[in-house]
Amino acid sequence: MEQIIKNLENLLGSFVIVLVLVVLLVLNFWIFKKVKSTKLNGNILKNSITTFILFVGILIFILSFPIDKTLKGQILSFLAIIVSAGIALSSTTVLGNLIAGIMNNSMNRFRNGDLIKIGDLQGRVTIKSIFHTEIQLEDSNFITIPNLYIATNPVKLTRKTDTVISTSVSLGYDIPRTEIEESLKGAAVTTGLADPYVYITKLGDYSVLYKIHGFLDDSSKYFSTMSLLNANVMDELHNRKIEIVSPSFMNQRNSNEKAFIPKEILKNENLTLEQLPEDLVFDEAIKSEEIEKKKDQLEELNKQQELLSEKMKNLKKEDEIDKNELSIKNIDKLKAKVEKSIEDNNEKENLRN
Image (cartoon, rainbow, N blue to C red; front, side, top):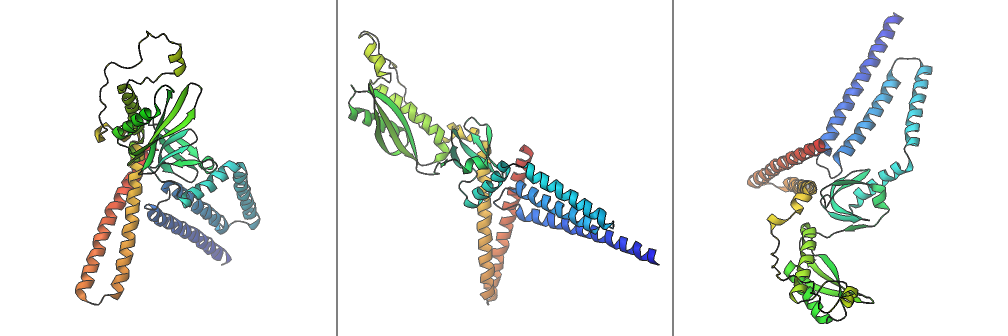
């Protein structure tokens, strides 16, 4: 009889273990569905949840397994040693990256698609995760930056609109300052920059350093506009017969030597959308930015749905209730489309990684 009771206890223990594991798997699946449309990095969040649930499952399995208490204690001690060793082997850098990643995500210093500069690195953000941030550089390649480095270094975030574009040119004292400033402002206007202004940033031994600034309405054209501004500055100065060469060289050359000015200067055309290399260079960053916009749209739809649900409680007329329910159903359909689009984009991103 005692043997039968022991067998029943063993079977009950096994049943409890299986039941707990099934519950954990269902919980894991439910959480995954919930985090698909969140603004946090889905892969990192899912991996963290999976690791935690797996650890809890192993712990419950060991505690529920019908073995001697001494052996069970040894197994738990061994597991504790493994966890402690893992934490010890994970250097302070790993912990620092984790904390910095949480800070970056909570502070929302920048978003996917934003143009940032950290030290000598400049590019558009493609991935924000707990441990690192990935940016796409102006040569279309990717670089991964530890979050601890981002947290301990200044981050320059380029504004989406009305960002300042500038370039410098060094010219001699023999050229009138007003003529140079007029030329530089003309180049900025031709480039499409608004409200141009000129700074004289340095008075050297042989030359003056001028810096032209202007406001760009769309930072997605940042690099193309920088290139075009340099080209227009060069063309504008050459049109006025102003040489862009070292003043020390000009003082040393013979009077009969030719000037370094092109004989024919072709007018540079304004940028068009078809000519923008940024669309090709920052392809992945643009996709990441689109996903962020869809997440914002989903968040806004959720808010609208909550407002309509609250409004429903106070409605009494049947026609108003029907109209409100129809609006909620339409939002549900739109949310399904947005969620499907986000899910498809995330799957493509996972394949790329």
